Amino acid sequence: MANDLAFRPSTGEIPTEPGVYRFVDESGRVLYVGKAKNLRARLSNYFGPLASLHERTQRMLLAARDVKWTIVPSEYEALQLEFMWIKEFDPPFNVRFKDDKSYPYLAITVSDSVPRAFITRNREIKGARVLGPYTQAWAIRETLDTLLKVYPVRSCTAGIFQRAKQQNRPCLLADIGKCSAPCVDRISQPDHKALAKRLGDFLASGDESYIKELSSRMKKASEDQNYELAAQLRDDVFALEKVLEKSTLVFDDRTDADLISIARDELSAAVSVFFIRGGRIRGNRSMVVDLELDRSNSELMEYVIQELYTPSTSSQHLEVPKQLLVSTKPNDAKELEQWLGELRGSKVEVLNPTRGDKARLLETAGTNASHALKSYKLKRSADFTARADALSGIQRSLRMKNAPLRIECYDISHLGGTGTVGSMVVFEDGLPKKDQYRRFNLETADDTESIYQVLMRRLKYLAQDDQGEKFSYRPSLMLIDGGLPQRNAAIRAIQDSGVEGITIATLAKRLEEIYTDGDDFPLILPRTSEELFLLQRIRDEAHRFAITAQRASRSKSISSQLLEIDGLGERRARLLLRKFGSLKRIKSASAEEISQLPGFGPKIAEIVLKALSDS
Image 1 (cartoon, helix red, strand yellow):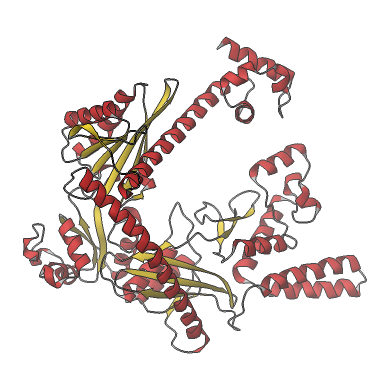
Image 2: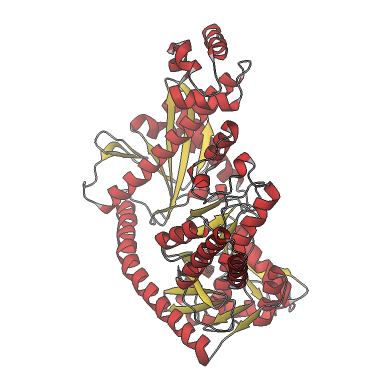
């Protein structure tokens, strides 16, 4: 019964005002964030008989150790706070949709003094206007290539741009008319920025008014017998019309809307989003999620909207259109419209069309969502089964009480006894949690002492029990790259820290033997077993992360030494490292080889070699 939940508050203790509540586990990790118009009425639903609750809700309650709430003045503020905390805490039982694949986007770095247009699969680019997503990479590349004839915005990388600027010579794109060459001041920076804005506006809205303007100018140029200008304008009109032809016209009223449809079953949900700008389909996107708690379609739609449009200081969210056409209207549609309107700066409608062209297109989005759900479940079933088998196999092999849902793996890397770096990688449910990876800079080159120091620094957080800090989440298994000496160092760290209840194991590369904290004899797992494959994958990821960290540390150290040389700035230091790779190779190079690098010369080359020989 729910009465057995020790943390259950008394009914009179729970306020009746609107607010946001959080269920947390014994380590302080937030398991679930929810909002309520009436906190008492909402939370009382969780504390009825356990048998009457959904299975996944039972699992969340049994994992929780406390419930906390925050009262807010209105339902709208509860919605805002809920969205903010879901982003901040990433609770495992909340709905967090993820793309079923990576889509191409067109990014324009509008915050740069000289904006650049380029294709990317990362929509989280700070200071950039990101348009899309687009269905096919080749289609947006072809579109951009065509549009650069009309809007010749810079599309080169920073390195190419700086080189052209220093040499006062533009690249080939300027010669063929696909760049206005801001690098050599053929166009002023304000004019180039305005050009980039027009490119973004055209792609975002598909505005045909500019085509009409160009057509009028073309006719006038022809009447004035300025045939060269008329031909150029004719080509521009043809290019823009070609771009618009690739976008299907679905509405004649120049609708700006996003269509969102959900397909689901008891365990998973998929979402298909169609982006309509200027009455044309500009792109589409699918997202999928595993449902940890039982949620209605109305609640799922609310979380989809949150996922798509919530602003973040570190990410680029989608532009909010005038309308959201949804397959199921959210319960808090009024509050969502207010929130979206503030993001857009003008009125936004959340509608559920039931007839006409918009309803028919929404049905098409629903068909796409159903297909995405089917594909996801086929892929997920195979993947999930393999990971579940691997975790169960590790539990049996290491004689653990429970399956190791959180595994942390450690490795040490150094170069000739210097620049020692420790790495920690985290896997939850057999999948990497890269935002929780950590690096440790160390003074000693001894592997066992390094393992001891890294684990002591890690275990300190578990001993302190820092509430809410991801670094304080308790692992079920600590895996170390190594053999018996590393195992002994890890056991010593566990004993000295006073932390209990964590299984220790090492995985040696030679025979892939495993040493645990319960036996001095190695455990050999079958070569083809799922559990060994998962442990190897985690060990190799820790090794990769350690080497990457060590190389970055070494490169930074070498750069620091080079920057101490008079007359050698960051650019020249980078050129030296790119050419020779290490201080040893730079020292052994001749003055002639160094002087041939761009920006160097005999005098600088002699200064570099003399400074390095004296060091």
